[in-house]
Image 1 (tube, helix red, strand yellow):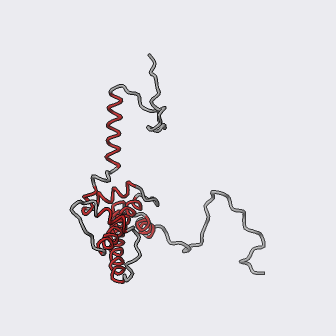
Image 2 (tube, one colour):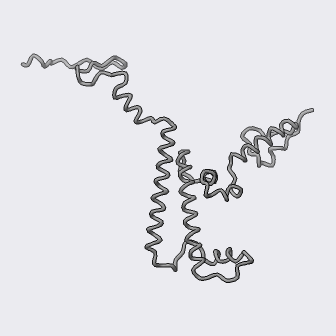
Length: 201
């Protein structure tokens, strides 16, 4: 019989009791060792994470435009379009100075509109991902417009929700100062019964 082997079973483990591991099984913890390096890999500071997301979004846009360029060069079929040419032509004719429109003009406008929508969607999607959402919202499009100088002509058409929130807060403060009752917490402001409140006299 081998003296190193015992016929008695080991004692049952006790919950919360320290476990003894053989020496050298795991390296001794150090103050700035592998654990700190691993933690830095997992948890990047918010500024670094934001910069990394911005770089990734910029790279996606560059890949998008490279793909669009290749697609335009490879296009041979000008008959099928994603946007209706008749509607584009109607919009073009809304200008009273436009008398005649060449057949190629609506085709070019259709492609330009498609590319415009795609780029705005890419930029809005990047904003949605920054906010850890998987649904593209109006606020994402508004943020994309506000962040991109090329889209400044749309700032008045698609206002930021922040401005609406500030206006709503100012209106609520003015109403409270004037003694106008506010809707109860959790009741939507559009509820017609929210203001059906008679103050006690």
